[in-house]
Image (cartoon, rainbow, N blue to C red; front, side, top):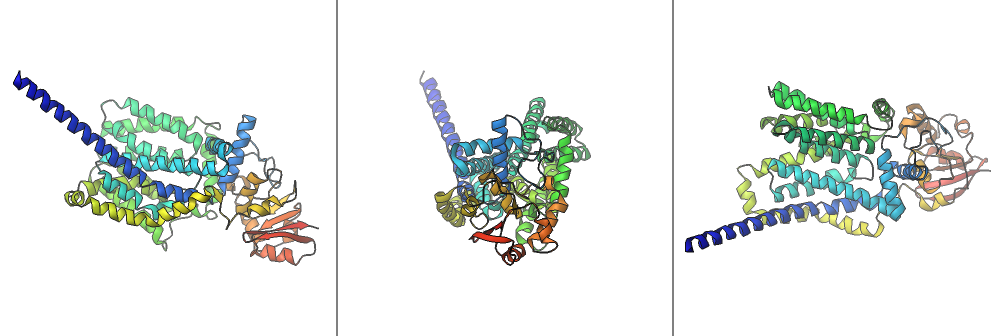
Length: 477
């Protein structure tokens, strides 16, 4: 009886010790996740992405009409032209947040999506064997590379989708029952494609993994990868446009390449871009060296895409950081890092000081349109039901704030077409037949330093009625 009692005591003590260890690990991962919070709050302080504004207005239309718009309702230049939406569900999501709390609600909702991204990156790091301090430090200290990419836009969904696929892939390749994770891939892809057409990147990632696994003679893993890729491709058709969304994705790329900064090729002269690519390539080499061919395929396809379009660089970093954190955690220096973890915490805290300051300052104006770009008060002074000629960035803001005003252009490149966008840029410089281009417009809203603003100031047919640092407003006499 005494022996049995001692055994029970030892067993109980062991159980309590294990529970304490689990609680400690959970708390450590939670703290690592919270370290990413200042980054998302700092970004939420100011809305600078022009797409956000027309997406909110489109979501409001979708909710009120209970139908996705099929033609352009916002401009006077292409009014009624067929229009395909590649993020209709995301538009509805942020429109719901706008109804609840205005633009601050939109900013907080997108900050929440960014926090989900950070949480999934840490989950992947844990799955790969990283320790909480190393993974949390890697994610938090990457803020100078990532903060600019966490704007309120549907690309946030792409970050989440890519990480979810990376988490599911090991269960498909090496799991005993791959059917469930394959079904999960299909579900993730179906939700993803309706939130944003970037889901097609996920299909490419899975197929790249299948090719590498086949080359590595893992026929079972490769076969299940192909099945998962087929499930993702089939799920991509479960959207309001079916296969037409594939053609539209190519149209967006064609209309935006060379015009929108994030669609440009990797800039050899940008240290920031090279740093992000280097992180991705280092993770790719580690994954290949560890024979994690599925992850190597995912990293490889994203890295190649990032060279062609820098909009994939943040996806590459989010996917690469868990790999690098796991490598450090499992390296011969892991013991040293563990013993000096307090020093690691202090370094991380010191590195976060600038973004924490920005986050605290941002709390006073969460969701504020960037005053350097958007003239909030001047937009209110636009005459009712005016046909507005405007610059590229300002059109989307007017669409949200003044739905009674029709714009000449906004950031929907796929709708207006490459030629119209380039022609508008020439007019903005005050070049070409400006008077002809302004035919049909009875007010103009452009930045004050543009050539068009200079031309309008000297033209007797136009009268300036208001000015802000971001723009000047003219009306036709």
